[in-house]
Length: 229
Image 1 (tube, rainbow, N blue to C red):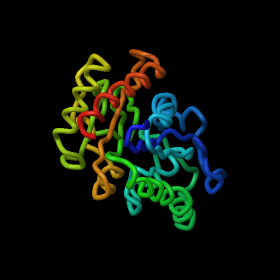
Image 2 (spheres, rainbow, N blue to C red):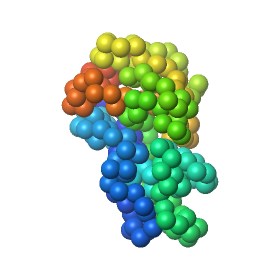
Image 3 (spheres, rainbow, N blue to C red):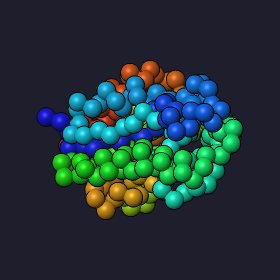
Image 4 (cartoon, one colour):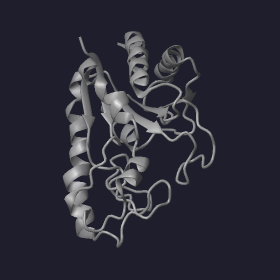
């Protein structure tokens, strides 16, 4: 029986939408480097084990669904630079293009998340993170933990978060950092009124394969869901 979990994987995509094909400067390696590299191998295999999963194939560098719709900053919903401070466009996208990107890719993602809430107990927004904090990160130049769990100080009960940290520690044989370096992004904050949410960040450090990371995530979630279901 699938676990009553909704998994969101917002940054696994690498596609450049047709709306910006003619002005995007990034090559495939830069797109992947700015994405949650490895997220597809770690989280997508869990789809058959949970009640619902939402992901998309559009590159994070082009449309970041983990930002507010009206965040038009350098690292906003439609960015000007990657998290490594690389310019994305030869010229800024017009407001019409920005609106089309939001309408075609951003809003459908959030609508899909909301459509599953009646069938699940909790939502997990799942990411991978660079081993060392990039220029845009809250911890530029610092080594990151292998596991970071976040609830933005309230998107799920602290008891749930602590229980999940215990399960990840058992599965990965390492402490799970809580709300550091990430406290939780827009997805968990904007959907917390629907269901409880946790953000998961796994380091891209190659301490084990992505296949093994996936297996251990499943192990951790299987233990955890029994404590809260």
